[in-house]
Length: 125
Image (tube, rainbow, N blue to C red; front, side, top):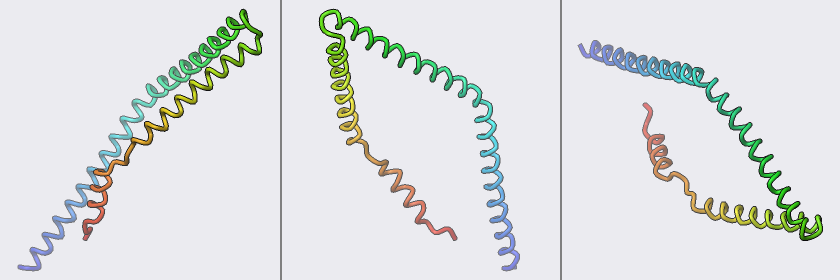
């Protein structure tokens, strides 16, 4: 009778493992289906975003050029370009410094790391 209980426990354990595998397989299949359905929408959004980004870059370049030309009315063209380039360099430098300071406050997700380490240390037998 002890052997029968061991066999049924082993069978139950096999059923559980099989069910978990089947659930994981079905979840992966569902994820693939959902990703493939939304891929075309994501692609269209990415293309539109790229076109918008390009348009904004060109618009910004034209704005900078018009500022240079406006300043060229009161100073030589080379000086106007130098003033605008200097102003942009100062603005860019300030943005880099601000970003560096903000990145200094970013911390690793310590609770998640601790939880994963704890889960990995559980015996797997």
